[in-house]
Length: 161
Image 1 (tube, rainbow, N blue to C red):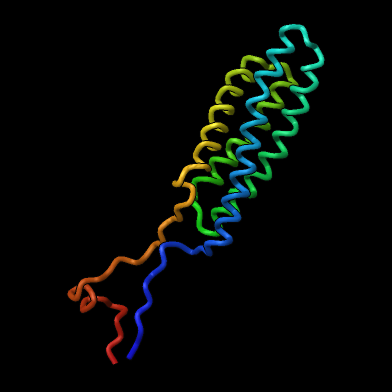
Image 2 (image 1 turned 120 degrees about the vertical axis):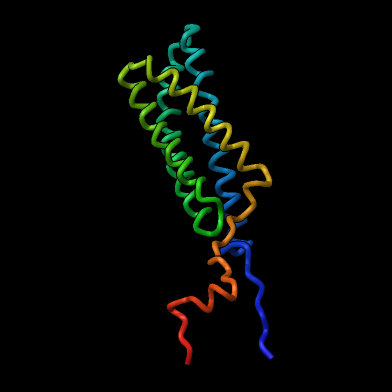
């Protein structure tokens, strides 16, 4: 008698997936918190606390590092069974953060400010998503379509022996 194995829903081990998800949660939350401090620090600078510009620059450089590790964690999350769009989104956001910091140092405020608003929104949305149950769902394993008996009979690769 042969046993029939039931197909799994994804290529993941629950323990490894859980670790990758927690790592992603920590890094995306830290990224969002750092991003959220940016308008606060520059607002204080504009109110006359001129040392806050140094903090704004330091946090901008720090968020590049954290977003890099978040992108690495997102790739790990996807490798162990997470959604494919996550590392793409986190990676694009990290790339935009690098452009954002460069525009700040170049004093290109016409790009720096609206891009900053976009990045903060993306960072907060990612941080919210990673804490929802949706981040715990694995992607479905792709299976070849089931052939009908007529299609099996007409299959040129079918070997009759």
